[in-house]
Image 1 (cartoon, one colour):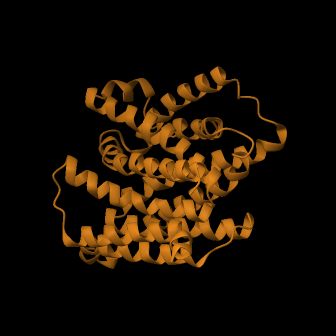
Image 2: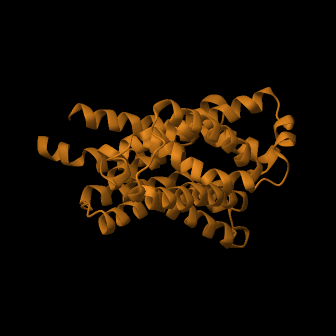
Length: 298
């Protein structure tokens, strides 16, 4: 395995760790501020950091030929994804919602095959199937506790929209990453989404900021620098050097990390379903990423 591919895999794994650990902070902030207000506070800080970084690097000038791609990535990818994922999880139980979002890597793989001409290999398909099976096992207790009447169809629709938004972001930005560095693509797409995210706030920003205590500000900083800028930059670096479909399977690590973080940080119980489901999902990622190499060695 060459060093560039190794770095891309490590970047994606690190991004999944950042995103997986952010789940608990996103929920606590959403409960204290509301989802739209939490996003507004985060995007104010993200905008400040993004503008400063672009000015320092001198990469804020974008060729006119790339404007449409950046607009699509910012509006449909960043803005649509962030709004619908928060709105969806507000209406749908966590287990059901996470299972719905497991279609995201498959959406990425299909769009990459149709629009980028990437080959949809049997290893990727097998990995997706294995990971979806793992997510079923992982969240089986939650799924069996939810009746059809208790699951919001509107919430499921929102989550499917967020999956489509991130899939589009991944496909649209891949050509941009061949011409621009990861930070520039991340920062500009976030700045394009920022007016929508900030404008959706239901209260004045100074009032929202004053409501946060020290712990909540630390959570905001984590979501801005680690999960926001850091995670997205690492994701963009990964998809630049790997196929979109193979990179998409790494998204299955997010619930595994989230459950592990809950056990380590919040002392949540680790059940047989968690262990078996997590191993299946890890196996799915491994099959999609390393299947051809392992077959070659055999």
